[in-house]
Length: 130
Image (cartoon, rainbow, N blue to C red):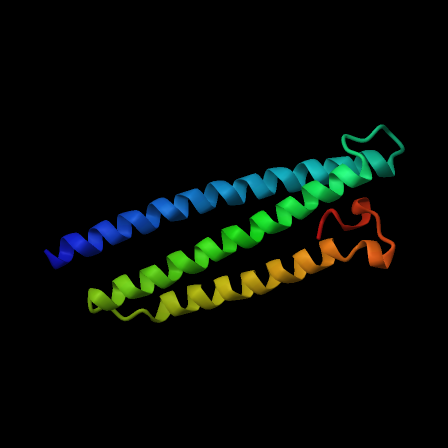
């Protein structure tokens, strides 16, 4: 019975991780589009988005990145709990959780930069890759 419970927990965590991976792919796709928009802007060609639209998309992408990282933190914590329930040593899982924590810090810094770019007189074109 105990084994079935941890198997169910692992399945649930993997499902949540799959959703986070899809969110991650979405953030990459958005970053590609914003980068292409930046290339168009620098080459003097018509852009895909106005500065305001690009800024809103960049804000959304930054928030989505934070959400994805938070999901990975949650999944990592759940994996640690499952490993403890199964009597396994979670040392590597702690390292993965630490890695997710650093990614969360980086996501917060990226969000700060994107949301405060106007005070630095950067256009969204200048900060799209942040």
